[in-house]
Image (cartoon, rainbow, N blue to C red; front, side):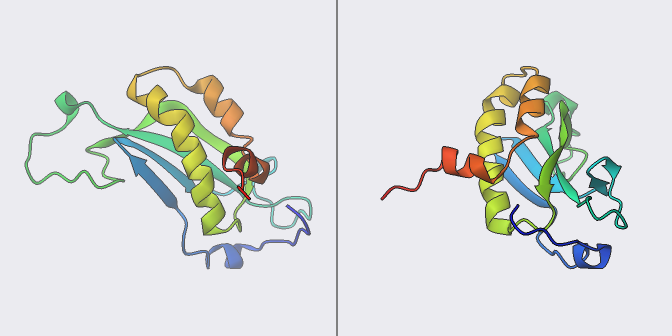
Length: 147
């Protein structure tokens, strides 16, 4: 994370690109901040703590479970059409002030890892535990700069 600076709640409220979501073929992955820090809830008065982002994975519900109303929205966030994938919501070590561009790269990595597993209905708990450690060094590994 380089030179660390303390992040205060009033600064958090100014980050306008969160939550951030990527959707691909019936799978959605979202980064959001729900108040988590180093050891549970973010402790603003603890100089060692910083706000951690959480990722959650969603899928389009089975068509048989969706209301047949033709006006129903498939927009992400509509609880009538989307459901959270079991064991696919994890706190990360990603600080809340990570750039939007970097978060988008993280979302691409998560989507590559999760999409097929979710579409096939495979359990993803072990995958989620591993992916919760995602950090900037992963970007270099997944998307090496070609010279």
